[in-house]
Length: 564
Image (cartoon, rainbow, N blue to C red):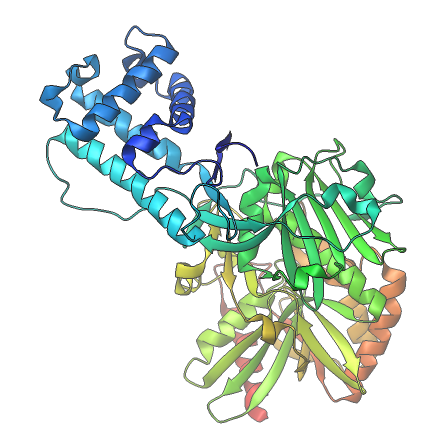
């Protein structure tokens, strides 16, 4: 990125490599501050008309920008009675200006970038220290000017995220790809991320629509992204390596991946990736597609540039779709569900895997179990909270995960649940329907290890039955899972009763011919290893305020664990 500051609608990206203000005067003298001020004046023209005319004060917008900046510089070193400015004739409006421009800045989704280990403007500082200093600088400037106008000190101080929401260190990475992927070779890789949590983001879309479909040509042929506008988040998704390339307009989604997928290190990124995702590709097609490059043995996904793909579900689910397709090719069965290892204080331990589509009640059943058994449960180890796999080694079925975090619908959780880990969480549109939180859940070492399965149950949110039911016939179990029935709650474009092949529209549905024999093999192996195969009734398709169904299901899950 060549600009000092990139502003686009409600997004701001600050490039510390080009310029880095160390003092209030440095900041006020910068072209970046003038840029923000001009954007703020345009904003007041549309939304704060009285303040707009106060700012202009008979001047052009350019003149007003100069005069206000001059006034602010003077206020750094002088008392107000030493300054000659028309803006001081109405201190109430001047205070409104100070508060509103500060709020205007904070309404942006704000990120900083710096070259890892060799920042041009701040070579002696780490990216965390540099970003923290910038955050303090913005806050100090606001307080200084505000208190000058008030004529007194504040009595209450709030340490807000005044500078950025997150900082990103980037590096060059020599990719091990053929010439067919040369368009990607100059794109900078994310090296590390610093999140200011709890982080609250407001993407302009809060649900995913459409399907991921296979295409006949490699989307790399339609990629012409400018390396100055693109970055790559190298992710370890389960046991696979994914290069997730993203347009900078979607940096909020990419940075949020830090709470979901383990960031691959520099040595790991020297390997050829298993998966490539082009997120925000300006191809004008409004598509979400994938392609298998047989020659390179790489699955390539592409999400076209559109405002709605700000919803985090797009970058998450495309990445998981590519993972699932690659794993099915290896003979592993993708499971859309949740898997935890429960250890009781009595010493008994069980691996509990629940399967179901979005809104079926997988995560909610686990949360209900936590609440119910808090005095009996010693430890809950999360293997996955959305997508995992079952594979067979030496005749034994094992579960593995994909994500180190969880992307959870707030509406379906008990009121206190999202606040337990809010100090590490990223909230998305918390005031809206389908509000979500991304919170860390497990270490990568746990996620990518083999875990024994003791119970496998389909999460049924549409029947009025209660508790836990065991299938006596394997064909019935497979039929229920393949039908993938649920009461859709509006988390995608679906509402009401719907069916999705194997409750998994992220790979299995697109390649049912490959998935069908895998289901037969895996389910037979589960049965041969005496795994409980059943159905759990969550009742989440009914009144979501009524938690009795979830409570009964949790009670019977706990009984199963206690039986040993």
